Length: 354
Image (cartoon, rainbow, N blue to C red; front, side, top):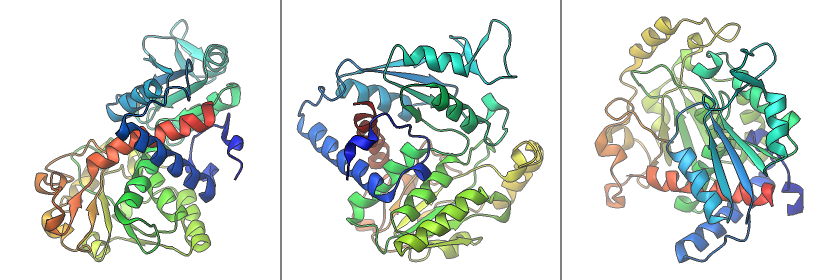
């Protein structure tokens, strides 16, 4: 395929990228991972190029993997705290002398560097579902350089790339792999939908047999569900939804239990703006937890995945997340998955920023 068609493109959601393009990204990521393992310098790829990173939310893996990645590619990542600059805001959300229009910020940074990466979800947009995604797309509209989504309230495409790269490394294929994205209990309801939505988009796009396991109140975006059904038909995989935590896990190759907010958490028209009810709903499902007994329902070579940070003791028991012994029949690959954030992000930046 024509890889020069990657240059200058935004990376906001995998819905905008074809299966073949995603395969190219994974191929580049594996090559860069090999070079990193061998200590082969590859700092010529983005030499002297600049990535501006705007974080409305805290971060460990995302910030450090982007900064390390840019350094290894020969460029530099600027960390921008919205509270320390004039906070980028959409029209109607301005506050005198403390915010600045997204349109202005995007055009200024476009004159000074080579890409803009943004993380925003939840409290910074007052839990209005889709507001952060709208802001990132507004950046993309005004910017003359690629805009990269480091997680918004709908999508986390880089995490999804790391997820499927990890699956491919462990099984050597996507065909016939049963991938279970499941809700799991957490005492905190402040959990965006971005990770589960992007995970099932990526898994169905690559042709896996995908099961979304969740309580009825944790339904995901209908547009995402429709896309997953379409991808499953196109690739020969499958997609189904289950409301039974343990039944969904039976025969799985990948178990990915993680909390996300119920519909009631979001502002109308999507939700009810009722955090108290959201917490009450969460507390009904405390038994949705990754335990050794739960993992034993899966295939003998199954893997436990999580984007991290995991809520230990609630979403998952220590004996599950810390188990890396393949002799146990199943194992945790969360740190392989976390490392792969570095490699897939380097791949995308290499392709769109060159």
